[in-house]
Image (cartoon, rainbow, N blue to C red):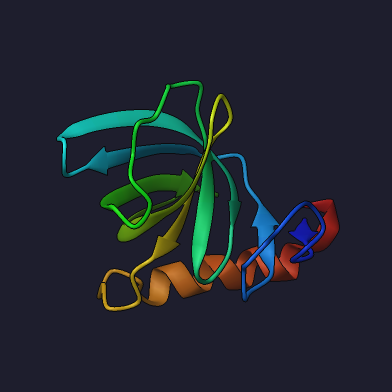
Length: 118
C-alpha cells in the first residue's frame, strides 16, 4: 500500500512510501549497539522502523539498517532523520552505499506494482 507524502504531520520524503511488515534491526555505530523492530514503511530514499526501545540517537548519526521484506534481505547504510519516542525512528538511506542495488530497486518496484491491496 502506498502512503502519500505529507499525509501525517511534517513529511519531508521525496518519494512514495510503501507499507511494509518485515523484521528489521539497526546497528548503531556510536555508541555501538543494536536494536530490533519492524519496518513499517519503505521508499527509495528511506524507511521507518517501529520499536519500543527507548532510543537516544542524534539526528544525522550513521547506522546500518538491516531488514527483510517479502523474502528479500537487505542491509544498507543510513542516517537518523527523526526519532519518535515510544514509536520508532525514521532513516534516510545513504545513496553512496553500493548495497542500494538492483535487489533494493526491484523490491521497491514489487511494492509499487502490488498497489494498495498488498
